[in-house]
Image 1 (tube, rainbow, N blue to C red):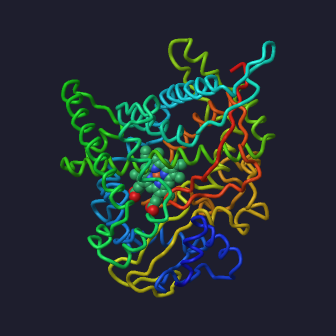
Image 2 (image 1 turned 135 degrees about the vertical axis):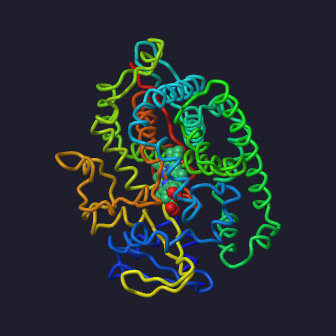
Length: 478
Ligand code: HEM
């Protein structure tokens, strides 16, 4: 069984974090996985750069995994390779340019204000909330399922800001798309087993294994495709009618020349890649700030000094564009440190493509699996210093540290990967995270329902922590 037992039982990326710190190596660690299959863990900057940038076409997404998860995540950019990948990525890039995302800040802000108002209403409606005359805010505070609220918010933000379409997920907890995604991203041992089986058996065999989870996943995928098809049809009608030359994500996809089925697959993959990861990032930030009340208060003070209250934004009739949001150093530091310390996408898979290759001059045969593990690299003391395993936003403060956190190389921060397959949505995700976190921390004091419990990433595709309740207490005046 190789290292499978550890890999299966521990949160994703945790065994590799341990190996990277305890096994002396020259840039590569080799280990055995289930059925003693070979796996490689690149650890040095040179090895990671070779896999992700210099030889990105030789280290591809494992075909078996791509085949297995394409049904749920779309046969779009995320799983294309070679020329087709280049064409689609080029078509999509303008929708994610830094300039374009800057122009979208008011929309991110206004959706975030709507989000925090909905949570406020929920907190006030809870019988646990007691307002005491003369004292500001609410004293006792209910536990809010902020984790699922964040998924609803990021789905709506991606819809409205990125696609010009309203999914209505914040106002409707039973939205079919939302339910489909919550099935797909639900942490499940069966999903992990199904994905692993795809490495060894043909897809039709795995698909027909009578696991309840199999049926759930395929039903959810059908709902997602149906929704995407309807959105594309609707957008095409609007574009024809208005002769719009919009550069939102959906228009960029439509400009790629793909046929209707291709467009649906692209959209499915953007929705999958683009809503659960930012929700996970903000949820980690909330949990970490709840564990560190002094950082939370410092951040709140900064936010309240620099940003208008969501109430004021709405009273004025239009949201106040928070163009200064990326110039609030402590907010940026908290976002950066959360993304470093708890990367939402804890690990990624590659395999040696059609022919053998080398990594740091070591020959690797075709099919060798290569694991790229942001969770491990981002917590490596050799890159981040002895406090690498500590949540410390201050490492991003001070001259020359805002962009690097004090690390000497880009490859110390692997959250969005790097190179031609790096995340296209990084700017989008960062803007969204800053706006959502700012409104939440500006308005609420947050603490963990069970502070004594360790926060652990769930077993699943994103690292979202499991079973965490957050108490939300309104802080007046914002
Ligand atoms: C904090 C949030 C996010 C994180 C941590 C994240 C992380 C990543 C990572 C690590 C990859 C590379 C995966 C691999 O190659 O195996 C990736 C790819 C991708 N991401 Fe993100 N992502 C985030 C948000 C977004 C958003 C908001 C969007 C779109 C709206 C998006 C769209 C994509 C796409 C389309 C790819 C595939 C790129 C390609 O293969 O060329 N991501 N992301």
